[in-house]
Image 1 (cartoon, rainbow over the protein chains, first blue to last red):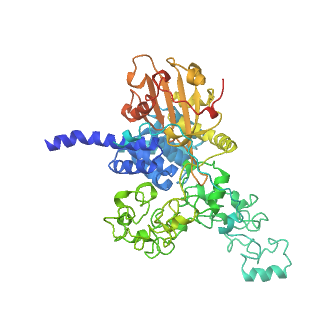
Image 2: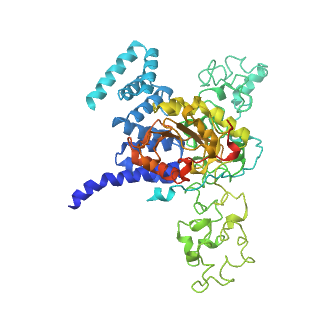
Image 3: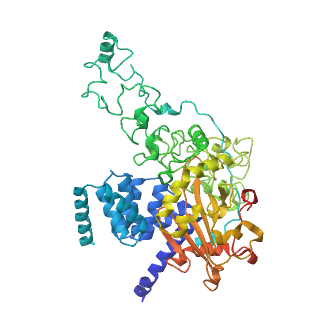
Length: 150
Length: 446
């Protein structure tokens, strides 16, 4: 019984934590947002991971840290979150916190675009036009590998 | 729940913190100044003299480190060539090719010190002091940034003068802005200096050694834990044994923020936890300038969401003269937009109920006390048909993050996550249709 109630209650509790963090964020209380979202993100909550990445990017509630932002975006992106994926693409395309890598950028934009989003699709196509044949081939390979692994 | 407490936290207020305007001389003091003759090796100096190349340090091909690729990593054509007359100028000379080069260029004399305000890396990924990076925003408030640089009280983050600043440049930064953190540089740490430090005498001192741990930044404010308040049970209550009680023996007793805290005495004491905080106030001109600078960035950030309002709101009529502080939106600076169907919004108190199809958008940014600007969320209200959701006056609320994430939409995905929006808005008078009105002084008359 206890197990069942835990199983039923856990998602609701997680949801409440995220909402608390979001309400705190809305109110400008970033430290509380950070506190609420860290444990959720560590437990694999995608939304919390994306939100936490945003805090690290902006230096809100925590010292700005692009590497940490990248880490949490990556965690969410690996789980298939399109927002995290398009931000990963943006990081690689513009060289934010990582070396510029058009192939990696393309892969992340392409994955994000698969959710039907126009923004990453536009960026993917623009990038594709700038890439050479070798890069395109490598991107296709990586996409294939990613899909096989996920 | 915490968010319930936060519902409708405040009425719209203008929170202000007046920051002193201080002219900074020697902003680049931490930078390495490339002056001919200073960085060159002695051998080169001799050689250079022999060749009489004082006016052209690049003249001597062999002995000039500017010319020799081996001994000069920045040699010849590279951007950081010290032979470049621009490079020899002031560290942050805009003419300096090193300064204008890639952020985090190790050749850049401005990059030498992590927390150098002149450091182009300061806003970038590789700088541990990139605090308040504002989502990598290139926009900032020069006046506040300047004030932060020379005012240790002004900025909590990344100010090398500030004991609360980054570890990298500050030995006192052990614990975030805790005046008790570092003994060496903190007069609050020593018991002798800080009457709050003695646990026996002050039960408030136990809380993280922070005199601000109690209510209102003042351990003496909370009766329950205030040794000054409860005479009966507090052996320290007597004037002689209680340093908080007697002005005569306690120079801090009269201080405004924390009578128990010797750091409070000086307004600009970097140890004073009462010295910093609050939203930075912008002048009209600054608010306009920052918003103009930030517009493109905000548009690009919100566009990632693919939300139609996010893509189009910037072309709608704007109802605020300039960005103003909204206490109900986290003390962020906001601007108000409404689409054509929402034009009645411009009638403010006489707006009545909005028709279905009316859309309101509020973009936002925050300004830290060190002048750093950060793009905030985009708040959207869309009036839906009757019956959509009586609990929100048929408004659909959406909150879009600068990352492009949409964390909730009323009656849509994550509906529960934006309930607090409706909860606050619906608390206005019933005839106001859940609309909070912007302060009169910022209203555009249509």
